[in-house]
Length: 97
Image (cartoon, rainbow, N blue to C red):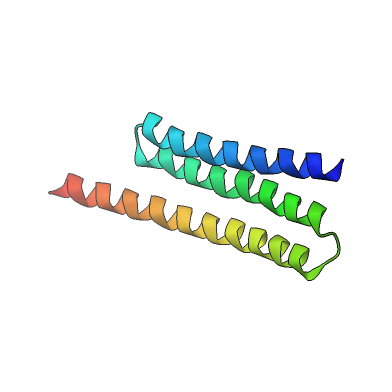
């Protein structure tokens, strides 16, 4: 039963990654595309981390996967914010020209 749930989580993580990748082509502005990257990081990362935790409960590998998920979520938020801010500054400097 655990193997079936694990495989389902892995499939869901891969589908979320594909969905976010395809959405990059669909969305028009860079601000909208930032949300695709955040979606893949959070949803895909959560599914993969949960699959590892189900496969190796209580082991150091599970704790490492959880730590990586937290780091990715925090770093992803910082990088998304910095990218959005850089885009905003670039647009405002182009308007002044």
